Image 1: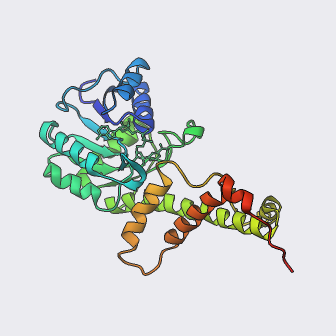
Image 2: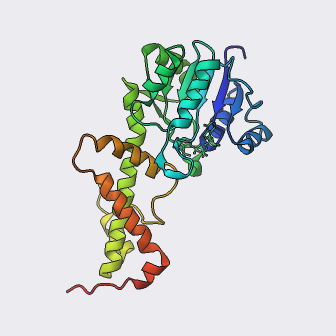
Image 3: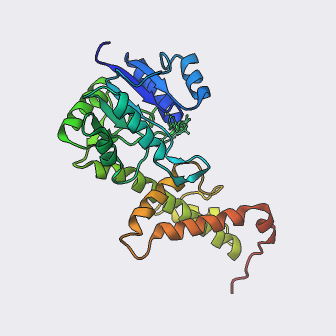
Length: 284
Ligand SMILES: NC(=O)c1ccc[n+]([C@@H]2O[C@H](COP(=O)([O-])OP(=O)(O)OC[C@H]3O[C@@H](n4cnc5c(N)ncnc54)[C@H](O)[C@@H]3O)[C@@H](O)[C@H]2O)c1
């Protein structure tokens, strides 16, 4: 067990699942979370050994904390992550690997590396976890990985690749790994917003959305999604916002901006009051 002591920081959906998987793989896993409830659940379920009272003495620090504002899950927020990095820098073991599994924006890993003054290795291994398909899309699925330096990647290959047996897709720069996750979720956001736009169009034009969608989806390269209850959760809106914040510095217009407006209109559209007012428009 010596040399394989892991501290999972943040024991929510991602952290709990990571700790569960790592414990199952035979590693010595401790946990840390600002929520006592999250820690207790992990202890009760025996996915961690104990709550870490200090960050000293671990070989691997896996950061899985939330990266949205505590009072608004649609707004990116990285202060908590930098506070954790400062604590690892102060108490952590020299030469340890710090894996950031939380979703972050471009440039975050390098900032963390600066906080560590290059005393630890830093990689970003964004998660693609999907709770409803935990077996196929849980901890062990193809994951993109980028490191701040070659030595960081080398250490991470051993941990994520060999010890955890996770198939890795390595990218040249850690920035590409950071962008991969937020672009994946931006793409998904736009796809859903398109379905919402089409649904609103259909409702107002007196067209059966499902019939139209089924007809369109018979084409081999098209898959219009369902329009459901609006784009929620703490991943898609916040991650798309991270990408929008980057792209608006470089581009005049963004399809994500438009998609956000469509989603906001769709939420109103499906609320009971608006729904009651919708009258199909007669088409001539
Ligand atoms: N859940 C998913 O399907 C999913 C998929 C991919 C990526 N992610 C990303 O992973 C990260 C975590 O997501 P999650 O779903 O596990 O969130 P979650 O809300 O289930 O858990 C986050 C945990 O972090 C803890 N936490 C917050 N700030 C902390 C701090 N400063 N120190 C210690 N603990 C802290 C919270 O108490 C909570 O227990 C986010 O960046 C999210 O975008 C989540």
